[in-house]
Image 1: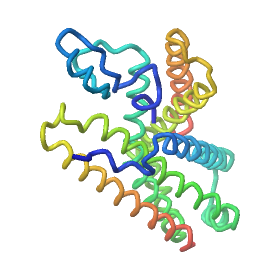
Image 2: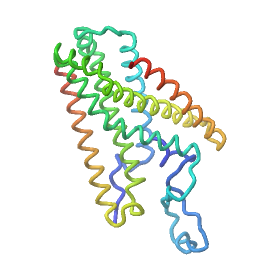
Image 3: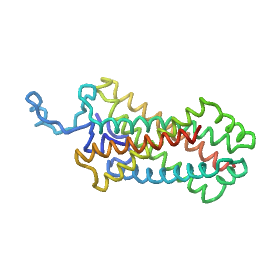
Image 4: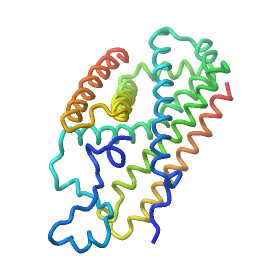
Length: 122
Length: 150
């Protein structure tokens, strides 16, 4: 029975690369965001909304959303294939793992759509 | 995400090492087998790897919290004021600090992975050293963030 088809690309190397590239994007985004918050202690709504509605920031935020989707998928997939195994769960392992991965994928897709709505709703 | 598939320091899957009873199976197939983590003593590299995974899962769940805060704060002037009010409560401060701690640890451990990808710190000693540095650097950053949040 084939039980290992749910990674992104059927290529561990591609997943590895996607994880690294998305990690660098996310690191840049969150350091930028945290830096902004640290240097603007008395932030008001107009500044905050203005900051996120700029075109460059929208592109950066959307890029981070794509990156977090890829990164979270690779990570949750890795964890589920390592721990939700027949050794831990017996004969239901494949079903449990598939449902867990499906739930992660759906949650991540919902987060993505929600994020797009936030960015384009300002 | 650390450990598991991509690092030699703390693999949770290893190529089957033929023992007396498993020689026959090993000859038949060199498939990876899962180690039972509950039966082996874990080195420091294992703890930093597992923390990397735990912090990743916390962040995955935390995305919902962060998106909720972003949504509310950007939706309107009142929403922004409401998020500011939430952030003055000690419980919310604790949650935010927890999420930022997971983020900082995950970030520092992730940077270590990128450094290791370039071939540095891949030996057994280097791995232990790297794990210690990750724990120290992230602890300092987490403390500083705690000061900032409060």
